[in-house]
Length: 115
Image (cartoon, rainbow, N blue to C red; front, side, top):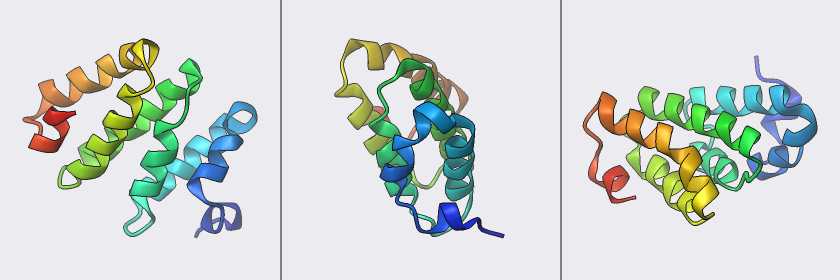
C-alpha cells in the first residue's frame, strides 16, 4: 500500500526533508523508483540536486539500484549524471564509484557513456 505522505508530495519537496528525515525520504524515493509509472525522472532530478556529501552518497546508491533494475531507462540515469557533474569537483568525486560500477558491471548504453 502506498503511504499518503509519498503519493502526493513532489520528489523535490521530499528532498527538503532529507537533512532531518533521511531514512524516511530515502525509503520514499526507493519505493517510487521501484514502482512503474511513479515518476522516476522526477525522483532522479530531485536526487541530482542534493549537495550534502553524506546525502549525495544515499542518492548515488538509489541511482545505482535504479539503473540495475531498469537497464532500459538510460535516459533518466544519464540525466542524473549530467546534473551531478555540473555541481563541480566534489560531486564528481562522489560519482566516481557509481560511474565505475555502472561501466564495469555491464556495458553502458550510449546516453550513460556520453555523460
